[in-house]
Image (tube, rainbow, N blue to C red):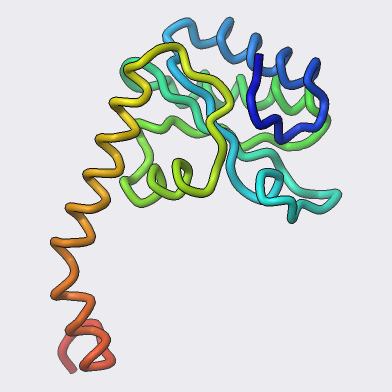
Length: 141
């Protein structure tokens, strides 16, 4: 059963989840993010989804699955691999999106790792960002 359904139809959301789990047997979690989650979608808006798998998802398989999901939900679907996304993108998905489903406790461990990585990244670049703000430029010139 999908929690925090961005589709608005629990049966359709469950069908979407079942299709993801069938296509990606090593799926660990499914997330929705973007305009449909924030309530700012329009008639042409796509459905943004991210999947966490045990290793990395095959990009061709993700593309094919996104097409199948689009047929199911009657809108374009962008489907990305959480492990292949940047730390900043992972953080955005976790903090502004909804986790629709999680297989087990390892998902929480992954999410904690992402939050720690983002904190470390912010600390590492804090000085650089302060210099940019103070000088008003990114590099010499």
